[in-house]
Image (tube, rainbow, N blue to C red):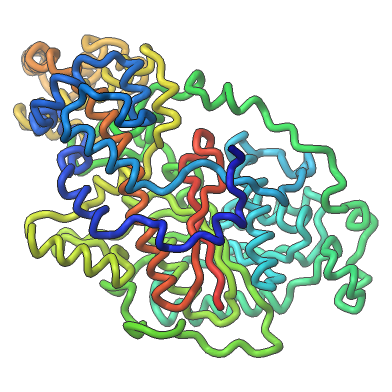
Length: 570
């Protein structure tokens, strides 16, 4: 059966989507699977929350069987207890489809434009650019505003392959400078890509400034000579800007993309084995508030491996929904006939950036369509005092369901640790894990869990910035030696620390077998958590009169954050 196309999914109605009440009830009922910090695996004795009837079945499964469990139909397991069968059924029913749709308008990319892109980035940029083209075309947009534009990979492809003028908005001055240098080397028409340094914040003042900056940039953009629209309307093109190099750039005239063998690259054979519980590829940003979280935190990258410095908003309001009417149309000014129609896009919008972009989108009359991919949900602003996120729930529908559930269970709430799981790997890479991969994962989770327990029992505070190398996880002896080496303590205290660590290892070695079983259950809960967040944002737009759809545009095994929020103002 052929995959649905992008247009097929745009025709689907919200009646096919899971209900917030069902999503939240499921997450409440199975809170023990997702609401814990990985390093507290032994401190909290997570496995003890597993129902006894689940324990007997799951612990008897081989690693190969656990790999396949997230994909199997409940009918295939008649010996499963009813409660486990129901869990499997609900996890599938409450998850959005993740199979990539067919992108019919995807174009080949100039080999020059591919330079510097990883296979994952190349897949995302080539696919996203085609989806943006279809989204902008449907809304009659002739300008793209890319928020969090980074080094400009996507913008350059949108310009050269699809004929769009683009404004790149980036919060890091260094990225803006590098994007401009890269554009200068790409044989691009002068004046069709403008890079603006700006950090989005959810305030009226910043919104006004953003409108002014973007409007000025759009006014200064030159019509793209590669655009069929510009070619058909020569008066729109400044002939002085058409260089010989520009004339040579013809969209779609280049050789077909030759992407590396992604099936091998993302089959699990080359996946870094340093995975945390709930993540099947090592998360360099897996930071908790626990003092034992000592694995090297050296990357400036967000969860999907993209620059995390870009355009990170600061939410000053406690409620991003503030300022909107409870019902009615989008609160924007009427667009003038002279105003350019803009498509706002974002690839890997981290933390609060997606909610802030939605807020800007609703307030700006020039923004007619939207196409964005979110990531790093756990980085959304969270108030420990009020025990709530500033930008979740966004929609009235989700807020009502969440409030009703909390009235029944006041002590329960969703927290960043759960949304960290929502931003982790999906089931496709879990299925590819080998026995060696599982063994490595168990050691990483278990050793860090023992370290957390040690810090708590020994009241050790000197390990806050301790860096643990990959080689240190080869054995527990190597791990424990790495922990105590360099501590500013005497030899006798160091020896006592080693003895304590070895005692904890012996005590909890029998519990190592639970690590992959719990991880498998997290693989089943992950898409439910992500579905909740995505549907909340979808409903938020729909409540304000904006037609929106959620479409999986990337191959899930290449880019786990493959669900794109696409919207058009009526």
